[in-house]
Length: 365
Ligand SMILES: Cc1ncc(COP(=O)(O)O)c(C=O)c1O
Image 1: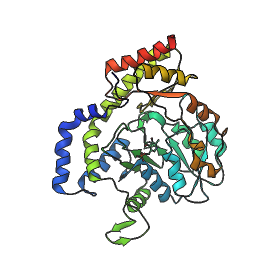
Image 2: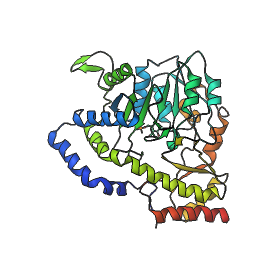
Image 3: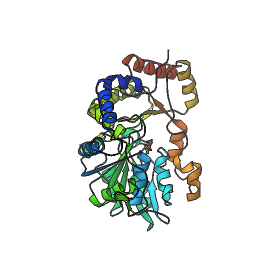
Image 4: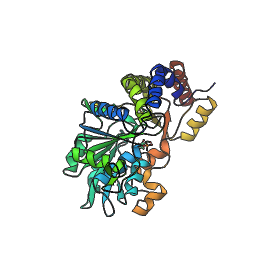
């Protein structure tokens, strides 16, 4: 019998007792847009990321797009980013008419390589969009050093709860974007996102943009959008937030069991530098015979997934910005050889053992 790659049904059972009354209250008050749930969740996320301001929006992609707009980034501007990410990092840059410029990644961390990043800075560089991929933060101390006055924006969509030397993801850059897509480490019952920043002017611009460019009802100072976080999503996320630390610890325990089992048989793994806490949004390994491993896992009924089969710079919409095959050889190679295994907090121990057995069995064969 198979088991799910991500077990959201088991997660629901753990929180149901608190979730159901909370959702009922939102319906009873009829406050679906903004209100206490949204502002309380914003305060809680600001506290959890140690930032001064948090602005709830309707997705992680929107969070990024509104950061670019609030920074005034648009046509003619370049934003340096990583090709090894979910495409939304890049589509948010394209959305505002700016040009994504791709730096290659470090094969050990899978995050943007500061040395490659340094070679991509030009007089047109208006921002750097780092991604904390799979829950491991990019090398923020080195990147901030290189960036000087260029704003560094954290795409922390996969990294809520991650940190470097105790300082959380979201608090390092000028601003950061979080996603509450249901399968994220902190996931809602639909789409949701958050911008966090300690720059009050930037937060103010994002707040106005997410709400039709309006601060006072029926007075519009700019062209905004319907970009708010729903009160229902905020209510769900407030119930789940107190569980986040324990869930991230369970992810870490699963990853540690894999590291111990697979480290012995020599797979390349995402290595966290000293002081970095990886919240293990994904657990990935690499093999030159990915097709063989997939066939074996399918035969053993073990779920698996490829994040990401095509690097962002080779996606069709990025072609107009001049990106070509060969620009980021490490990311291209990783995309051909990477495979993710189930690591979610609700993975049962016996299923984790099945994953280990299946991978080790394939290796022995
Ligand atoms: C790295 C990264 N950036 C951006 C996003 C976009 O977030 P959303 O799906 O909430 O728009 C996601 C997740 O989906 C992501 O993993």
